[in-house]
Amino acid sequence: MYSHDKIVTGSDAGPGADVPYADALFFGYQAGIWAEAQQAPDWIEKSFDFDDQYAVATGMIFGFDKTTFNSKDFAVIKIRTAAFSHS
Image 1 (cartoon, helix red, strand yellow):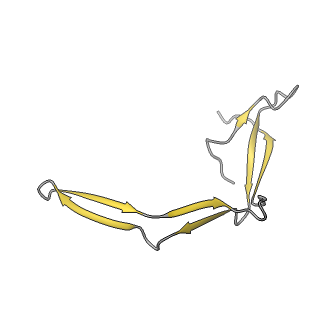
Image 2: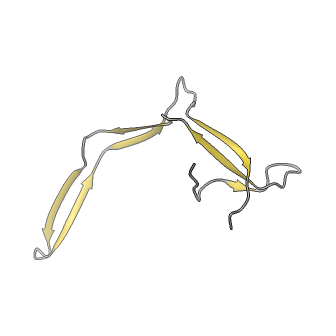
Image 3: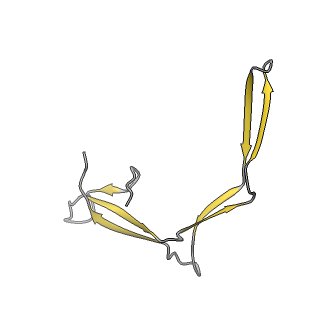
């Protein structure tokens, strides 16, 4: 289990429901796919300013996306749960 400060929380779940809530997310084992267009990032170093400072530039082509099957998402489930503040 992991927690994150960007989790959706609130207390306005609906009419007559003043219960604090949070959205729980359950991710399947293969919920996301990482793809790389190259094995390692490009790495370029150059000296400038009378050879006493160095500049480094890197670059890489990659992507990440949620998996779907026949245009349906089977990898992530969102459940609204009752919650309380940890403060």
